[in-house]
Image (cartoon, rainbow, N blue to C red):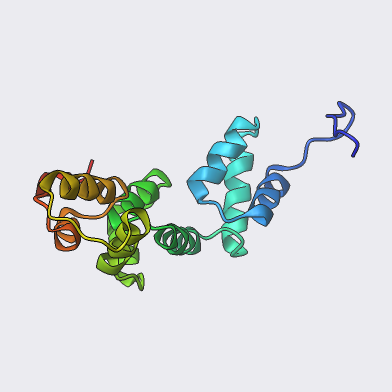
Length: 164
């Protein structure tokens, strides 16, 4: 396979075409596309117009992006706290994130239990240190303290649920 080289005579694609090419590979948030266009050296006005046009054409939609991210990450075994932080980093508002997570068809307790079984097997434990280790595993994956307590029967501090 021939290695692609940057031809200085080749014209730079427009910000619209660049963003469209990125969206052809996967969904991106508006904030993420903006950052990629900025790093590629596009003028702020050109990038804004391109993002506006992509939004009007429904090629870029933060709502669809967020729903897809929630669906994919929850299927990978991540909890709502982790998803909240990730969506926030993509520029979604707290109210919108809360609404999307509430609308998600995910049983977070069952998801946490599945992750626990996948990692530690079906055998439970009465050892407090082992329960704490399992609880920490779920907390790191972004499950709320109440859910972790229900699944592991371990003492977990609710302070872990506070927004960063």
